[in-house]
Length: 532
Image 1 (tube, rainbow, N blue to C red):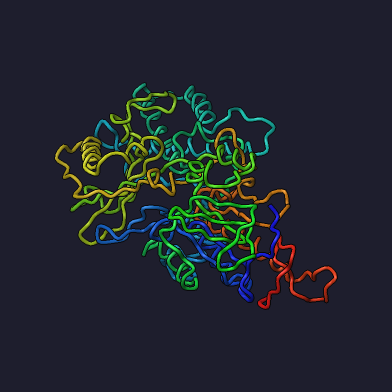
Image 2 (cartoon, one colour):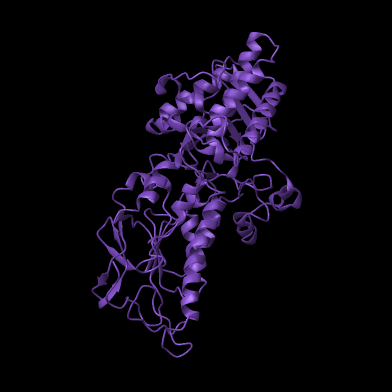
C-alpha cells in the first residue's frame, strides 16, 4: 500500500533501517551502512544473546573450538573474509603467506594421515589415495554440465554412482579389495555430504553444481577463533546498534505504519517481535538462515511473499553438518597425525541400505581432525552430516560419548582404549533460529532460485522502494554455504540501499530548484534531509 502521509524521519537523521539477524551477513551490511552519512539510524535485531550467527567459537578444553564455521575456504585476495581477517591481524603467518594463497585445492578435502577400518586396523593409504583420485576426478567432471543442454542424471550422487559402476568393470582385484574400495568411496560420499551440507548427494542437483566457485588458497583457520572476526565487525558499529534477544515474529511490509511518537508520519514496513515490541522502518534487510525461513515461511511475512520467491525458498536445499569434539587426556594417534578417516567395511555408495538410525547413526561420521594441542587436553573434531547428524542431536552427551568410544575401540583394534573424558557438539538443526547448517542447490532448483531469493521487495516497483532486502549465504549464487558468500551478500544489500539514497540525493525534485533536498523513497509529500 502506498503511504499517504509523509514518511517518518527525524530531521537530520536519515531513513530508518533494520537488519534482522546478527550473523556475518547482517553485521557486514550494518558496518557498510554505518560508514555512509545517510544511514545513522540503524538497528540490528538479533534473536539470540550473541552475534556471529553460524560463526561460533567457544572456549572449551582449555582452548578455543569452532562450533560453527571452521575454515576460511579459499583464503586468497579474492576472498573478503580472508582480507578482513588479515586486516584485523587474526591470521597466522602461514595462512598469510603468498605460497598458501596460491595453492589450488579444487575445493577437495585432503587425504587422511591414517585410515581405520571398522574391522579393526588400518587401511592402506595407497588404496585410499587411489579411490580419492577417482572420486575427485569424477567430482571435477560434475562441474562440466553447467551449460549442457541435458545432464546424464538429475543429481550429483546418481551421476557419481553411474560412473563408479563403469570404473568397477575394470577392477581386477579380489572381491574383498573391491568391497574395501567401495567402502572407501562411501566415506568420500559422506565427506561430500558434509561439504555440501546435505543428507545425500542424490539430493544435490547436477546441472548447477559447477556454478559454485572455488577460490585459490589452502583452507585456513583462526588461531584465536573465527568469532574474533564478527566480534571485530561488531565492535566497529556505533553503540546501541545491536539489539540482542529480540527474535522477530512478523515483517509487515507494503503498508502505511505510524508511530505514537511521530503522529501523522508513516513507514512502509513494521517489524513485529516475539515479545510484542514493534519497530517501524523504511528498509529492512533480512539475513536469517534459509532453514529458519523455510520453517516460518507462512507467518514471517505479511502480506505473504510473492509465489516465485516462496517457491525458491522451498526448493533450495538446506541440510545439517555437525561437529563432535572429543577430549582425551593422552593422544592415541601419532604426533604428526592431522586427519583420521573411518571406513565402514560393510558400506557401499551403490547400496541404499537404510538401517535404523539408533543402530547406525555413527556410520555417517567421516572421521576426525586433530585440533592443535590445548596444553593438557588432546581434542579430536568429528564431522557428521544429514539425518544421522540430526538424530545425533537428540541423544544425550553420555550416549554420544559411549557410541564413539565403542567406535574408536573397534576401529583401532584396542578394546582398552581410554574413553574420552568429555564431549562437546554442535546442534545446528535443533537451533530454533537456524534449523540446519547451510544451503545447497537441490534437485529441482537452480542458481536462478538463489538470485530470486536475493531480489528485494516490492518486486513490481510500486510503492516505497527497497522495503525488504535479502542477504545471507543462501542468496549468493556462486559462494552459497560460505562465510565469504554471506559477507558479500550483506555488502551487496548495503550497496543497494546506498545507491538508492545516493541517486535520491543527486536527483532534484521536479519543479524545484536544482540541488534541493530529495524526498524519501515512496513518500509523496517529500521531506528535507539536511544530512545529504
